[in-house]
Amino acid sequence: MTAESLSDPDSDYVVVSVPEGLDEAQREVVVAYVAFDKATWRAYRAMDGDHSAVETTTGGDALAKFQDNYATWTAQGLHASGVYRVTIQTVEVGGASSDTAVVFTCVDQHDTDLIKADGTSSGRDLQHNYLYMAMLDRSSGSWIVVAEEFNGVVDQC
Image (cartoon, rainbow, N blue to C red; front, side, top):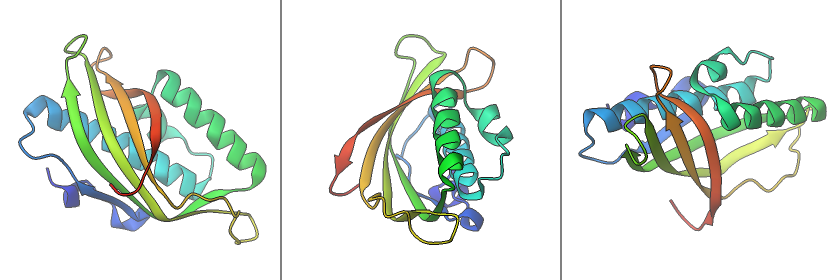
């Protein structure tokens, strides 16, 4: 598993780096988190109503939050554009139980934008680095993201 192998050049989704020395459980969590993150990025780019990839990687509060954001963007005629870069900072497995994990990430959105239906920028100031914490759960047999929290804006990832 490498940052390059997790990236998706076709959708301008770039994994900048993953921590070295991860064990098997941590690698599984990273793969599951990236599947979620990549699915949401693709959905927000396409805005075609197909949530199937997001729904297979997400549950709980994280899925509800995605659905709310997606509905808002749909109503406003917006979609994401540009290059999305994510750095996986740390991966913790088994805090409360072996079926829970936490992933800390830094997202570089300096090359992303929200685009209106007419093809022009929405003018929203998204071009920053953002810290996130995602909680994953494996009680259903596979890792899924069940919650994601915004942890602030930083100067660099």
